[in-house]
Image (cartoon, rainbow, N blue to C red; front, side, top):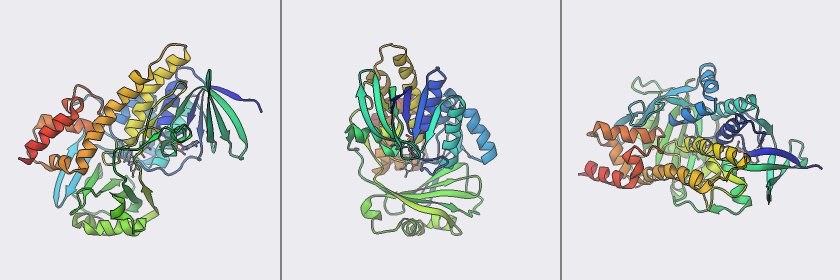
Length: 411
Ligand code: FAD
């Protein structure tokens, strides 16, 4: 069989793959996206950050998302709420240090990912569903992929450049032995969708609720309301805290251990399957090679606590697309200096806050009531996804600034 050709082959049609595809077809390249599933399909990662909206706008996908938000009812989101042992606090993303959108959506990813993939296809990307990538061979002038199609027939396609946007599939990290250990401990998550039946008038459906376990500060829950009266609810803990439990029974057991949550969700009804993800943090030894780059979760995944996953995925697409365009036009590109390092800078900022969440120090900052307004807005900007804004001192010197703030809050 003849080897097929494309300028860019993208593995995976999730958010990073769809946005990268849009950005590259807009530059006039022939882009083929290989997606092993059919859409719509379930994915975890339902609470977006406002910074995402800028990347969607850059890819001309924001209007499609806004239109779907109207027709499918994506839940408007303007911040995050936190609860710990009866203490409540909120962060309003519209009050933030960095420029850019201050609101976004909570989305069922089946609908959201299909909306982005359809948008990329309308712009000219060729998306092949039920096509799985099995092997990668580097060549002098690109990379050759072995693929099976929807009829289990094998074929080969060569891309002048390949983007791995395969998320937790981690296609190139596995095939090219790029996997490296995450510096976060293994954590598990149990989650499901519920008809939440929340009647508390104080409850704000426009915010994600991040709830700390009353006794174990490293166990937390998410409650992501959708606009149709349903919600995504999950709990995260270490394996030894979750391992003898089934996902639904374990999730319900943890909800009952927190008096605020158990009251709020007293009339919940589970809908759909309860699932477990065991060990989600992942890293790689390199985010790029001569003819490939890794996007989103196919590179590093930190932790779900601040809902940074899709934002990092879209940022990776936004950073890499102009470099791939230059490369295809025959220019020299420096993926280390212009892709990997700038991406890492924001990822490392999130890393600081995630680490400090689990050791409890950032929790003390979040629940400290006397925060200065300017500091509050700098923290709000990071939690809204603006982790690449070097004008923000809490981004630029994230460790140092956060440590000082923790000391102030603990005095
Ligand atoms: P994905 O969305 O995973 O898309 C990858 C695509 O590649 C899939 O469609 C897959 O079918 C396809 N694929 C895989 N292997 C192959 C193959 N061999 N051939 C072809 N196609 C393939 N993020 C948030 O922003 N907000 C949240 O609230 C949030 N909550 C989370 C909760 C948990 C418990 C976890 C674990 C993660 C959470 N995340 C969250 C992270 C979020 O799920 C991911 O960061 C995001 O989906 C990454 O997008 P992506 O485009 O990199 O990959």
